[in-house]
Image (tube, rainbow, N blue to C red; front, side, top):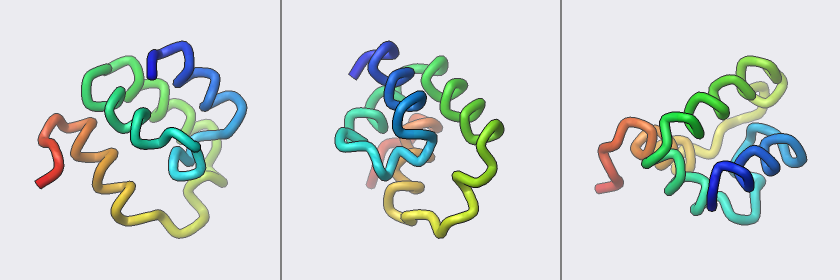
Length: 73
């Protein structure tokens, strides 16, 4: 996934990447792109309702691992 597709997914599907059909590719992009991390953070700030539902713990951990550059154990 590239930033263009990532932006499109944010625009059309929202900030809950767990609902994206290619969320594993989004996580991979988050691991390598500070811009993708910033776009997701912005989208989450702008849509507080996205965080009102229970989070998928495994996906949340994968996103955090990717964003922090730790990689999954």
